Image (cartoon, rainbow, N blue to C red; front, top):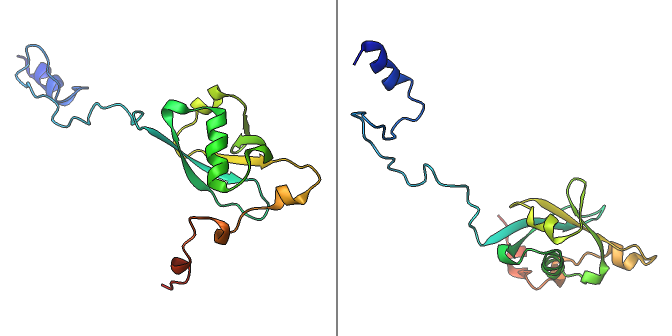
Length: 149
């Protein structure tokens, strides 16, 4: 083997550690994660969801089964988690500015994308201005709220 070829094989190898026919370096990758695909096999899609509001801008995280990704399922789970009626929702927006309209749109969402529910404006400020307080939610822990750090 010439000196130039040995230099090229040792220092310019674009795929170090992989087996090459006729090569004396027959290492196999040791870490199974080296060539693993991104984690698309996770069972749940996690989205950050909130109600459009000029007063409140916090998100909650909701989990959707990847096998059941649909507009209706997103609407149902989000409304349940936020404590609102699905009939109050006029539109669902992927932030910053994309309306979600059909199941295909929902299937394109990726983990931790931000989604906003736009409530109907029917003249009643009760629907658009109502956001349940933590005291009204079943997940509220009053003992934790009194803790000081």
